[in-house]
Length: 482
Image (cartoon, rainbow, N blue to C red):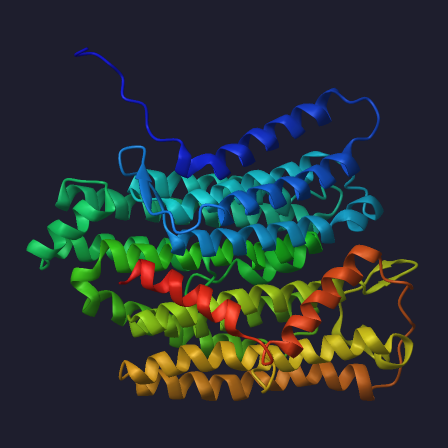
């Protein structure tokens, strides 16, 4: 019995195993089916996401570690995984009509989204530096391919290449930071590293390792000064891929940032708090001012996304349970709002093809009044105007910052929100008051109508019944930082 192999507990990883096995089966189905299998595979991926979400939710209050402590399941990981699966499912649904019209009708597209979602779930549950890296690389490699999926489009190819080159740089920074942390602590496991840092936290090598890891994570959430890839990739990538990049990976990367900072480096909070405050302020300011002159709606949303990551990082900088709760609520609301906005962008289609200029929205209130109304509500919500959901997202992170004594950070965030409201209101002004442009193709595809309607209802009526989201976020935050 001396050489007996002790197998890890597979119960906590059943959702990931089901997702991986299902994605590989759908890949094989697409390879061997003679007729075009894209629609069947797409529906299969959506069903796979639904099944995985039920398995994740069915884990209840389970708190467990497996694979020698490299994989963790708790209420925090469960909450974030459900958001990831929601964002991934919305992206797959939104791509149904688009990939057929744009000549991208290949079954690998939804399968890549499934594997990317698997990588994000691994990121969120990682409890060691190796598991963290594997999860990031799995989702990143899939997204590199999806960004360049429209091979006949020069912008798409350029977007994929830029994202790949800069993503490789961020992976190098991450690996170098992990090697420094391992070298100065002698461990790759989060809890062991935290214990060593708690015993001796003045090592300059550890600080350098933290800086490199934070740089890589800032790249993944497109925070300043590692945002340079965002506008070009958002503009060039196929629009459903742009939403996918703006949604689920940002949620996963923000959750991973929370895990790394609060689990691995709690002993040097004063050091990483300075980094987060700087990144947050820089992202909010750049997101507020750089978007003002953008004529392209996708580039506008890129800078908007940079700004929103800055607002979310306000809650991270607070370093409290309320701050974590605020970040989780913010990311959930952000994900739903962006799903609705990109449904509207996907509907910007004329007989000659898709258009992306903000000026093309002129007169939308007359040709499609309901779409224009929901789009306007989403713009108001992104600006943080009450009583829409976006107001509460910002309220909770700013309140956490005030409670933590970060008054200057909260004030800068509020001022940046006021500046940012200008370009959101400009979109509303174009839709309702500018001279009408040629009308878009009607009607909107059914799948976009459903996603847009659900996004609009959530955004408008969140104030009526916010309890489920707030309670879920509170339980998740308490699991991460008791």
